[in-house]
Length: 314
Image 1 (cartoon, helix red, strand yellow):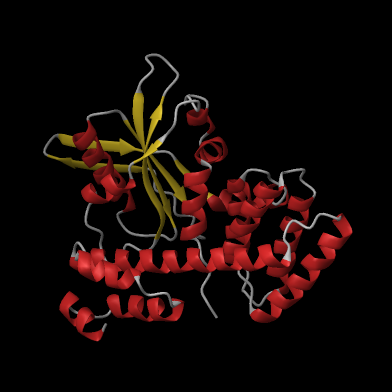
Image 2 (spheres, helix red, strand yellow):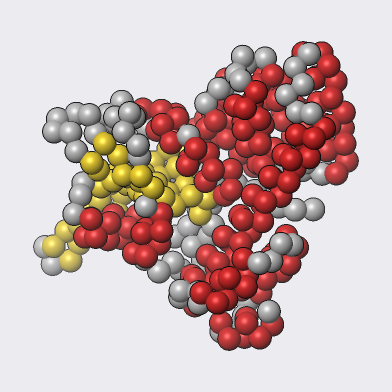
């Protein structure tokens, strides 16, 4: 059975729905951005200046740098570094500080560092980095939003028309249930039923359904039951948002997203252990279209001693 996916849906939702991200997690920033001006993602540039990651740093869900236009005086283009962290890790605060310092040095613009803590540990709440030596002191603070704080709002989030409300609800359900769980299937169906009744357009409903389906994966047995329930729901509401043809296309899109997520995790592991991945090797890995093979290579990447050994086994 495949593992639950978090990285692909969060990344896609951030790129496609950036204003809603800030509206949901950091409303004070949302109110100070001119959303009539197009935001610019600088993720490739961010990778070029990223600090080396400890091999025990754990998976990130999202790591993005975006340029935004402020509306408050004086209006100016500023940078926001966004990191969504999937599990508790050591020295997370220092990593945020190093990112901040390198972005500031590279662009010489005002920088805001933001963290969304998507782990299941309610007690882990990094929000600052302090260091001192012989009278020299460094203090760095950053806003952090904790997903577990939203657990009491789950009924409200399940009905949200903000994609990040649905992502938070889906992530919390995924953390507390198994793919074979009836509880997970019922939670997923509740959100789908609410989407059908939300009044959103067909395209928006399909996009939101994809996010929910990405995170709340079900076992084959539960998927069969869920599909039967979905067909009945479409009949009841007389709103066939997903025809059999569209459902097949959706499944293909999900498969592509999962492959991209596994490839990203594999390349990230190789980069963390051995430095920048050679372009030829990267292209060879990008041509792999089998999830199981990528999963096996990811396991290999975190166990081999050298990059050469990895390439030999490849």
